[in-house]
Amino acid sequence: MALGGLISNRNLGSFIGSGDGCQRLGKSRSEVSNRVMLFPNAFLCRNHQPLQASLQHELGHRTSFGCFIQPRMDSTIRFRNTFKECGVSKINRSRAYYKSEDSDITEGVVPSADGSAEAILVEGNLQNASPWFPRRWVIVLLCFASFLLCNMDRVNMSIAILPMSQEYNWSSATVGLIQSSFFWGYLLTQILGGIWADKFGGKVVLGFGVVWWSFATIMTPIAARLGLPFLLVVRAFMGIGEGVAMPAMNNMLSKWIPVSERSRSLALVYSGMYLGSVTGLAFSPMLIHKFGWPSVFYSFGSLGSIWFLLWLKFAYSSPKDDPDLSEEEKKVILGGSKPREPVTVIPWKLILSKPPVWALIISHFCHNWGTFILLTWMPTYYNQVLKFNLTESGLLCVLPWLTMAVFANIGGWIADTLVSRGLSITNVRKIMQSIGFLGPAFFLSQLSHVKTPAMAVLCMACSQGSDAFSQSGLYSNHQDIGPRYAGVLLGLSNTAGVLAGVFGTAATGYILQRGSWDDVFKVAVALYLIGTLVWNLFATGEKILD
Image (cartoon, rainbow, N blue to C red):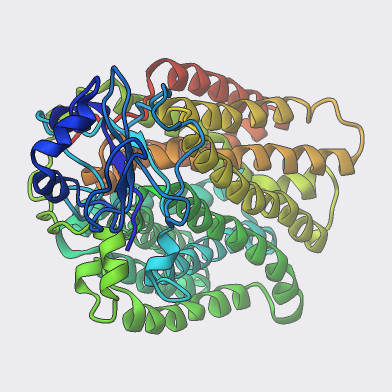
């Protein structure tokens, strides 16, 4: 099976030769055949005699580089058109690994003397190596479904809080306290979730998280009737369950998904969160009007049991644990190498000494401040400022999140395309995240100038749509800079993001008691601008942790 790979110019030059070095191949053709081992049925470049039919590539040469691999037209591998036969071409020096992090080396990579993988990016036809629907994308879809449930169970409170606050006579400060209590528990399990996933496997940790938060969702109406302290505890318990979701998912995808599919798979999973918001905000008002506000918690929480049964049947923490995974697809995912040992010791000092890690942490904080404010307070904004009723507030809140779901996947496709065309991963991440920061900053700043509710909703939708490009920016960067510690890195940066949710959600309630919505949006815009500056100065797409 022909697989895409990464071929370093210095790697090939080290054993193939340079200048008229193609002649050196005659010295030991069998040795070259054994060392290349990339594509079956390949031949030497047309200027030379054909090699054995064990190589499916043509070798060209040039003065400064020597021979290089060039596929035949009938090969299933497609090289970029910048690779010209026996000519000079620009080499993409961005680091990229066409494998999951469950393996040590990539099939199709000829390691250099120092073991580095600074290489040319080559596209492969991965889908041909698996059945009509690859098993790895079953994992992606299950993670997508878990994130859909995650936000359904989270945003239902932002709708239910309106009738609940009337029934229990809660002030804006109390509402802010209730909304932020979720993040108390959410904060506790960010780093722990990454460590647990590395140690016990993503299947166990994510499965535990969904069952835990689903039970807490069902218990919410009971806790509210018992009193405010009980409600705060249950919401914090719900946060504990949802806190492990992102680190566990990141851990699983680092094992299951090749880098060539990274942006798209992550964008699809995170779009589950946005569609979860769409679903929760669309159905919550209907359920409240027909059955009362407790119904949203009972109905949404019970869906977790259905997901859990599917998860037990189809999910595995790693490709090596799946007995039904074909050898062809396993080869695509693992690159034909041995699985790596699980992480046992986290090099905290090394991790925290890297500026790109701090760029992730600070940028995640700045990003989540605005995102969580919109997530938790948008229905209240629509109700109090735009004077929409409960049903209208819920339905109109759907539009921004639906926009995010669409643009997250568009952003993933754009990011993968830019990388495949030779733009460095660092530049791709900076471009995508700059859109994710500056877009929301611009549109939120316009809310104080709009005159109609329709324009306000449009600004919200555009703000959230541009925010979704962050999925191909900072949210994809954890696996770029330290794929082996992707779960821990995400837990670390998302801890800062959760702190933004805790302080931002609670602070919004106090700001509204003493100021206006304009003040709320000004704080968010300022943080977006700070995040843009930090990200572009210190972020990188290079692998800095191994």
